[in-house]
Image 1 (cartoon, rainbow, N blue to C red):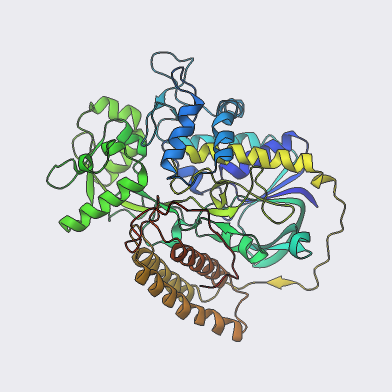
Image 2: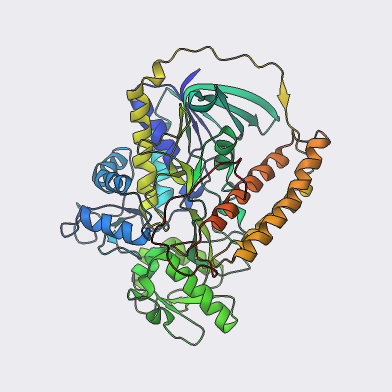
Length: 527
């Protein structure tokens, strides 16, 4: 019996585990892969917080609310921004090495990114997520009361009681090397499983970002909120020859990169007063529109206004990755295309990261704190991940959950899953991804969303057949089931929002609804 079970080992999960361990709690971290390889590792730009003298919390709050298109929850935004400086101090204490100012090494080098009114993006070159993960993992290995299990896949949460009395007491976990299912119990469980970008055909998200955490929380009875708001990053590298997608950081445009079309026209100048530094949803739609207008597969970022030395020193990883694709960004424009990137909605939580189910918390991209509203402000996500992970642990300690005494129920039978029919279920997952890109992408229609639900209905027939044939104890079936359930809920949420706001742009309802509100959805909800 553990004090806290942490499901996922990105920045939010590791921050929660370290904070809990420092409070003397016994923690078990589970990760799906052989090593942490989630979205946190790929975060390039940085972490946003107020550190510069001319910047103020009120400015950071205003920028966040503006980007969120009127749907940010003000209390979580206040908590996020005002917790920023203390959170940076904690990360530095845990060993994170942010890039110092070139003129004063006692200060941080601060980038500017789209939607920000001030330079406030702390970074570690252009591999900020990787540096934070390095430091947290190094610190984690120093802790004696943190256990770590790799290659584990969450099958379902374990709950007792019903309704408001429901309580999460752990999770059913599949050991991927053996297929054995084990029940793991804890007094509190923290979901930090990441997002759902892999549900879409084109994405910069890693393989694991396929909505698992949202699906298992929904099956347990938790609400998901605002999941129609998937952020399509406007600038992923357009390089079909690369096996893995690659993100061109927001900071590249903050550094002077200008969006241009094939004719060399700065098309953002006619779209938004911030031009190439407009919020991501606006930039993504503008690029998509320009691609459709010109019949081209991509647009470009022009960095010729900066010297080759500056480009290489500020973006060494991006420079090297583009060079691998045959593109020298000190001489050539960077070809870019929008791709699914970040889920702004997720499992509904309060300001202490609590879900509706007692003992179940969620933080990081899997959660919806209300900070991001209808569109995430660049580089707020890493800060949110750490701030609300720490708050989750503080609440667990203050609520008395770790003092609860209950006997873990004995498993009635030994469970095991198979690893057969991989090609069968992956083919169906590809159908799902293609549908989500075509019918629930950057620009949507009611007819397209309804057509997507018909595809879901057909795929549910494959689920019904597997149930009938007793083939549900299969790893690839479970992966597909999670993706299917989350996709269906996203389509339903998108149909219910009869307006265009932030990341949800639907041609049938191009205007804002002044009575807009947050939308909660349950797995049991129907159209």
